[in-house]
Image (tube, rainbow, N blue to C red; front, side):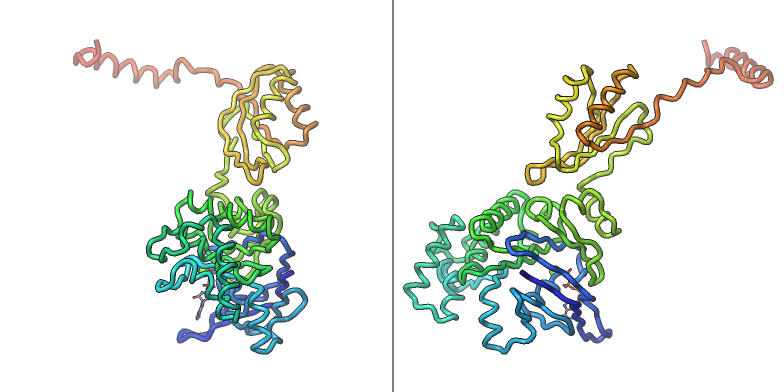
Length: 363
Ligand SMILES: Nc1ncnc2c1ncn2[C@@H]1O[C@H](COP(=O)(O)OP(=O)(O)O)[C@@H](O)[C@H]1O
Ligand SMILES: [Mg+2]
């Protein structure tokens, strides 16, 4: 378990003191995939670097499995750090070493005999699907392959925690998805706790269980991805989430129903089941549901039938399934069409019309 207590980190700069991390209290349970999200400059990297004391906090505690790292001597700290792997946006591989030698490197430093280190490196290469690249050099690899090497290297000493600082931010969306899948698989197979620092909500959606939102060095919101994603309360979370969530609005669309899927139900089966159960055809106007961890999140806008009895059946159905919905106002009664304006206006129009006919512009 990782516990940060009253953590502060400030940097002295020419321009004065910068409070990069301010009064952070956070608990990350064993086996979690925990996201820390925020815009650039929020203090995420500083916070995660405090977790393994790459940055020494100005005050507060970094407690890993009950031990405050700040209280350890150099030798004990080195030992503790072996239990915490880290990967970065820029991979940080040694260009002069082969893939296999990069993975062996932390083991060599820790004094592991060469044969044992080689055996472990071979296992790790298998684990990250790069067995055929053992003798390649980093320059010969794609970004995704480099990050796999970095992940294998981070796993070399059998850490219980992996810290990922924008690990997929330099990768294209497909490669990002494959790296996130790999991290999820490692989390499931090895039980390793993963801390994911990112500025991308999609990354959090794809693999995290819980998330903390950071702004100006502070944690402004935290909770399950489900809750924070659906009901963001902080401005930062709303700004981060809205581009992917895209607010559907029913304000200007009469006779519609906005359904909110909050993870319990997936969208399509609900609609098809509803048409059968309620014996109505419904028209889906728009939808932005997303599948997160096998559950549907998002919203759907459907058109209501004209028949009030059918609408009533739909409401009862949604209520019985506990699906949140919001209904727009019924179609407003049509405004009586005014054939003619007031007398003076009519007279004016007739004059213009006559003139136009005379000029030949109206036939
Ligand atoms: N070594 C440093 N010296 C001075 N200021 C720093 C240093 N590292 C980070 N900062 C400042 O701390 C704040 C948080 O930075 P950082 O933790 O890198 O944020 P993020 O990773 O969320 O983009 C920024 O204002 C940044 O300029
Ligand atoms: Mg950063």
